[in-house]
Length: 93
Image (tube, rainbow, N blue to C red; front, side, top):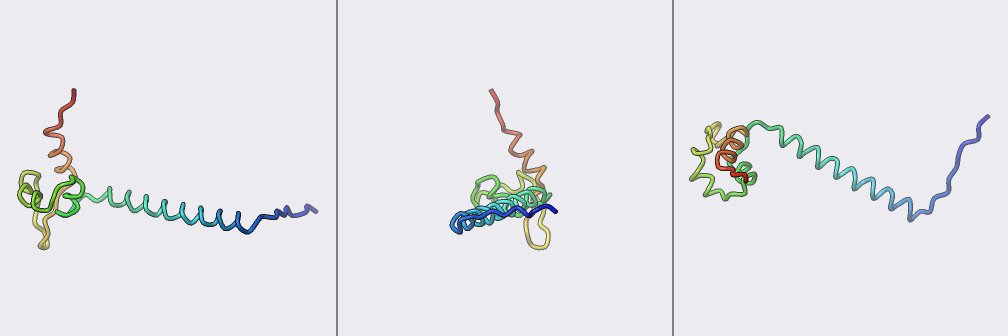
């Protein structure tokens, strides 16, 4: 019969390892939330403003240039239209 392997681990080391695992868990959860967010086909005016790094006033002034729809009292933007808006003035040397 095989004997079980037993290891003696210092409590401080064990606590550091547990802390690192908990931090890793939070990182994974955060990344999964970012991935889910990136899959959304429609963004609100506020989300689009954050994505473009533009103010809410700028977004209101330029919403029709980007392309939007008012649904349920909120302005919504399609990701593909946001990408097209950014790429239309993109210059590459």
